[in-house]
Length: 484
Image (cartoon, rainbow, N blue to C red; front, side, top):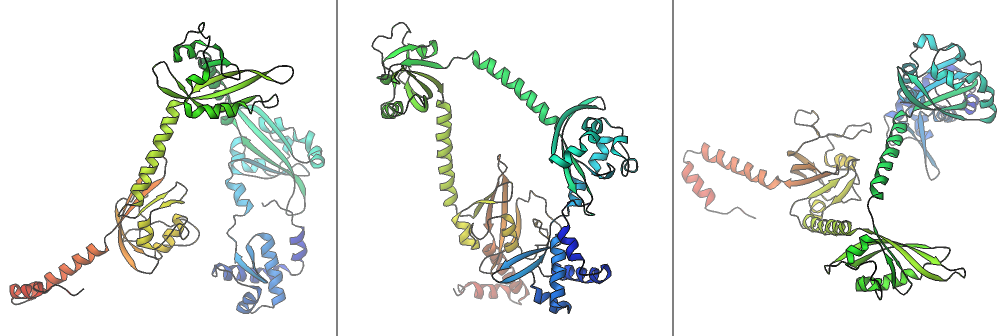
């Protein structure tokens, strides 16, 4: 049962009797289904020999019911067949619990998931009073008590835990005031099983507590210093790092352990500290007791006097040296990868797990003629490269073998004929690999010239073998190079 406001639909429906409208409506749907690009009202009325005003009324009905879609191109209105799924079908396959209750508190409908969770046969559920249904879930909702409240206040949400089959289950229930197709008022109950979410949140909380316990046993480097850089305090971790005892700080300046390139950044960031913005964060390199610089992320808090003047700073440093090195290695690796793929003699493409092209090298565009603007997705690529294998409706086409059967997703390597942008057809060998990220890395090898050379050799061999004097014929054929 579709849940929607149907006032306009009923008003339009009065123009026609049931028997008069069913056949034209069906004809219009069939006609639009065979014209994917759509038709105007005039086109439809001519093709079906209908009155133009009547055609417009029929289209209004189909538009309201969601069976057709309307697109405007300037003054022209083009109608196309709608591929939208009816709400009733969505309810049927929804993973949520869905119950429809009328204003007499009788159950009008329920999806399969609701029937499964309630553990009540459909015939014992549909048409019965909600208060007569024996289920802990229904009991917790207390629908008779809140039915009128829902009609007045609108949607109500409940979260609770019940025991089903000796297991605790958590549910989030939404009770929504609804007007059904027959204009009858009622309530739609949509329930979501959030047991896994609750369990995940609880396990995450436990994990965070364990993590915090571990972190509390670890000591980041901590330093207190005056705005000029003079150190007033360091903790044991920083003392070991720079090789200076905590009781021998006289004359020590934090800037003397800072990388020269980072000193201007440090001084500039300190000027940003104010009573209203007392904290800053910056990545600074510090010199250890072996003369090696390490990257640290410093979180610095300013300490101000009663007049708002900065008198001291406290910085907590986290070692990010490994992260910075890894990031640099990744950047260098990406640059090398880009250089290799850009200069590869073979066409290369990278596709994400959603079927969107992330990258096409120059050789790809050079061979096939397509750029990312032409083929943003695999769907677009298959539609253009394999027009004979593309099958509507809107499903991602799959490559097929010579017998017409779909190939498995892992089709590497395989040889297929590919239609290029200029209309030429080339024989391509596909090499596909799935990366750890889930992206597909595909290399294309053009076999067209190789296959043509093999074909010419075969023809030549056939001619020579069929000659009465093959040796003499072969010498004549091979004594002259073929014209270019």
